[in-house]
Image 1 (tube, rainbow, N blue to C red):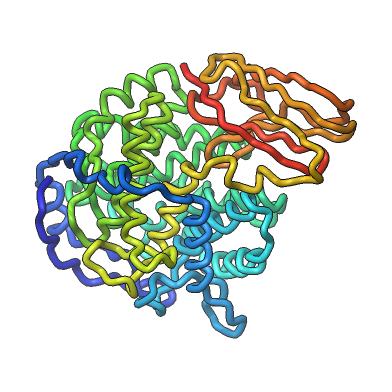
Image 2 (cartoon, helix red, strand yellow):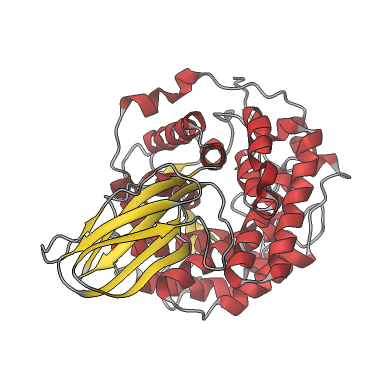
Length: 472
């Protein structure tokens, strides 16, 4: 891989309400210099971290939670109440995207553990977000330069979906609908101004994947179709310049493109998703160049390799994802859950948003189902959940369980992101053994995409879960 020093970043644009831009807009000249670089893939030796250390990923996730909580503004008299500070050394920078990420990370933590100690922080974060909505962040709405609002709206949808799923509260759904409408009404230019041809595809892919998921969640065909349209634009542009998958710009890298296209266009048209992922995956870098936000770029690459690995059922891509996550864990030199922007930074320069990236893009997928509170100890009466068979499977698999006493039983299937996909059983059952089959369909009778899923049994005050893999 090439080792080159990034140029100085151009002046930061003024933010809405006078807040400085945390991950600053870059000058056209600087972006063009990035575009002109060749992509050189990293060697396997970059991933020695993954081979040499075994992590407790749930513990690492908890460290992230504690770190971002320590940087949240919790003084009700502060005008930025609820917002998440950018970094340990950038306490005056508070923005909506970071705060939306916090909502997702803390909500997911509550979902995994049942721990309610951060509920007040989640509500405080919503206070900040509602005062500083994603669609009014800095950067404007121009099709060439308006990427920051679109990026923010993608995080808004992701945060609201997870929050509503975990808390059963639809208070902020109207806000999310407004963000989704913004993504429908606003696009990014991919073909006219070459200086933004690195940033805009990654942002549009991220937005498209989230808009599609939100459309499915809300059963809104307009959102789903426009998510597909955004993914199609990126897919077609990448077909003309596949090197984008190995480029880095602003806070993002080509891994966002892989994730976004697979989660938008190829969710709508799944027939050739494996062909596309197989053909384009080798163009995705495995480790980013040095630069201002190198650790953030690697987080996006980890997400891209995870998406490719799940799509192709490929141990190589999944190993790349695992390796990148472990590499980022080594960047947390003081084990406080925070991660600096780049390896050269010191341990007192950790960034909250990069820690959020690590939780969402990396740690969440590596946390074993035996590590989380979906496996809740009960009263010792030995509820049993067995491995599904066959596994991997297509399209049918069988799940066996047993309960020691008659009572209410729930058996549900979840995506790797924690979204409930299908309720297989919800009602009263007699004590003894039970057998349930899943046909690979969601609640609406649609065939789900190949990938990793979890099934969770709740009975007698206990909760157990296991992993299964649907292949094409």
